Length: 248
Length: 274
Image (cartoon, rainbow over all chains, first blue to last red; front, side, top):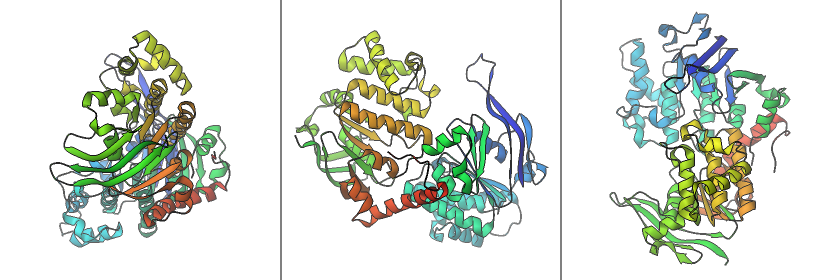
């Protein structure tokens, strides 16, 4: 469904007179199938969020191409309603002047699929993410972190996308809320069959919901394993990464 | 000296709205032990830390007594309190990025702090800092001290804070979610540094975190907070194995679910155990 072919990306280094560029992504290629959950794990600064932004079409790759169902992702018409995102910083993800209802409605309005009221749909979406319909009139600052992230997920699934990019979606939540959101995501996937690109540095969380895990390092793919074979990783870096997971 | 830090009936409230943030907290930290404070965000963990340091926002008031070495901190003037901060009580913040002055290089901040407490000149301070920074696995300390905070990673900044603690040798270290903003590898490295810090300085520590994995590795005692109230406190082992309060059991069980899944995926091998 989604295929990334030989993508590279570089940014200008900070500094006014410096001309040299910093390579962030180096020849990245992978596929993500329909309804699959692909985890991307790596250290901070390894370029995993940049990859997420490229998949979302917020930025364009320097070289290489990203194809969504065989079509180039650069075209906004292809992306609309098919790919959505949930970000880490839930405080800035929703327009503070919007109520929950308006926030969820925004992508639906942009689609212009029909001008009928989405009222029932919003109740249904809120129910799916485990919130009561009383939340419709609330503003983001009235919600806790976990609730806001639920609203973000409701907004992401509102257009029934084929793919959702979750960029550190659970990293700023508390341990207990993290598990609730992970369970919610698992549950939703079995219902609506969307693909997830789950970007995180938390290996345990990735192992919890992903089918395949991609270990990312310095802008390139270090290793790709299916989750049930995670213990048999080959590369030295992947082994080190797994050993450093702190368990209780 | 059985109790090093004693907090009695600490109450913190918002002056303008009258909203009570901390209800009635009483706890003790023994000498050379580590107390972990766990709970959800908004449960009052950070407010407790800042109340001890007396660093809460001006519109937040506090009452109750905080005894350090038997000395009541509430009676100290602002000037005396300033002397206590850093040398006696040391706060490590969650975001290294906002803990340092963004407009100067990291070194300037470090020199100023050391000059204030020890009267060292730049040369002496740099010498002491270099040794400390090397011991927390920061290579090329002089180069790092000439960089701005935004040029360094979160893990590095956090380790610089730990290095400064090594030089200052405080009696009490308060770490407010020091690893939350870090990735897995940096988390592990910073945890290692904390363990060594305790070994080397033999200081008391208050460690705030919602990562129970870290708490179990580091803490001797655990305090569980919810909505500004302490729901349970006890030794680390008793909290993890025989928690009395339902909320504590819930916190522990959620972490356990992720852990168990990870262990089953990994086939129970190749995971860090200390």
